[in-house]
Image 1 (cartoon, rainbow, N blue to C red):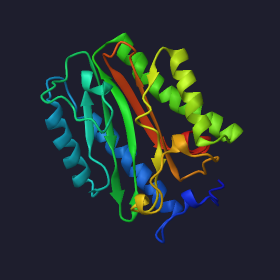
Image 2: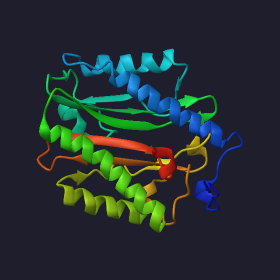
Image 3: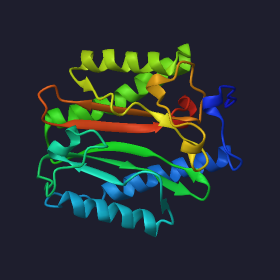
Image 4: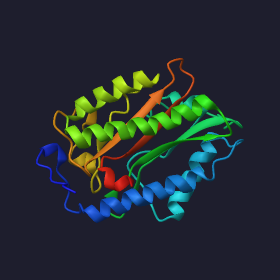
Length: 228
């Protein structure tokens, strides 16, 4: 995999390591799996957030550069920087998502995924489409090498064709050895060049046009070999 990057926005710090970044990604995805397995109907969202933090802490992960988020039901509509409505309880047939950003030694992880408990066809379609859209955008990046701006324009158009609204308050961002913000703090959606591998987090947050629920998926921008 070619991870070369010449754009100043894609610089890395002195501790940057391919193996380190992939380890952080692996640990992040494992934590998402372990947290989701502990989320059950009847749980209050705030308690789920504390549980998620404890799972990461018990796994040796540092909670560093953005808040740990677990969003239930109607709170899945909200932009990440908008606080959840307090006291939301996960129902028997409901949707939730995770958004975590642990640090493994010097390296940043970041990941998110949506889940459905019970049975609800529209929630299941939304969660499935968020992840599918992520991979469709990633495929365009891999094959055509467009700018970050064009990637999100494609994501917006494709989300609408799926019947969803794309939330541009989650426009993707850099990832690196910690802290990436000291190197570059701009968004992927505003990046006017073709993004390099292992430098960016692609964020996809789709929402019901009627404002009832949403779904989220994010991961590092990588080629197909990392998703086999």
